[in-house]
Image: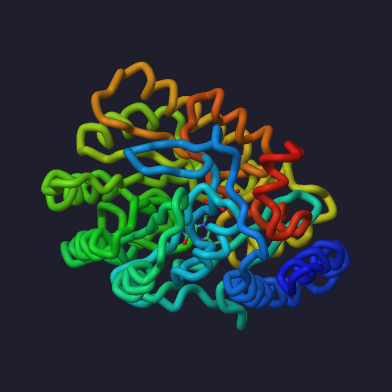
Length: 378
Ligand SMILES: Cc1cc2nc3c(=O)[nH]c(=O)nc-3n(C[C@H](O)[C@H](O)[C@H](O)COP(=O)(O)O)c2cc1C
């Protein structure tokens, strides 16, 4: 028998092709509220039978056992909820956050809190959520209480408070890293890629997009945390899928030198003109409405090629360097089936994360989504 979350998800996937014909602000309001209600329901459900992926899908990375190479991307479980649901479904790991130094309410516009929309005919979505979260302390407290399941390690995605550039915001990250380390988190993902929050450029001007203080921040984290550690807590840096190809090698050189343990590419895209041609004509009105009125980041199938291209280039470069310490490449963006996962594997990409694709799979296969992924090889 279907659970409540399975029923709602499968019914919604049938209904949404009709819903998108309603006025766009109404559709956005419905999706933005509905997404959060659904997540809250999903994270309280636990499949009747727990699933463990086939033994040969196990990955040991940085000395940590991952039951497989695929798990949820950051932003799904901002409050540290849903661990037992993910572990029982058979996820390769669980990633909480993104959290910042203190509580953030997130973005609101046109009466819509945390604007989100899905493009059903394209297998894509847009969001302008703006990192709502309860702060590092609250998230670390919740993660510390989790009774971990073997093979489903816990990651925490963290970010600085993006509006500030001063030392206080850097110290918030160091404070967070120490808190999450004490909370027995297995790895950290540093979110350096959210397109939905403003930050200051090198001239002190408020901008959205590439953050010019990135290198300074990485150096600070390296000096104040990474190089001071006895037992290594792997820190992965997550960049945008809009990262320019020619920046991948120099960025990797910096990350390796500073002692980081991996690179994830990546986050949502703001290249609306570029991706417009990939949007199904039936979704185009909604796409135009959302990107003009809210902006936000694009996710889903449309990012598949770009995430593969950038992470493949990164993996090739890492292989050519014969490093002494483990450094892994993680692919996020448009991952949705076994073909994508095998393609990543062949290119030397160690892990995959999914967000939009997870929900598409859940709508079809419910709590058995990982089981169907590995056993039916659809
Ligand atoms: C509603 C929503 C919220 C997100 N929140 C975060 C976040 O808090 N931190 C982060 O690093 N990425 C966040 N992301 C980006 C995803 O983690 C992922 O990088 C992006 O959606 C591309 O993957 P996909 O194509 O599988 O969806 C969010 C994405 C969506 C759709």
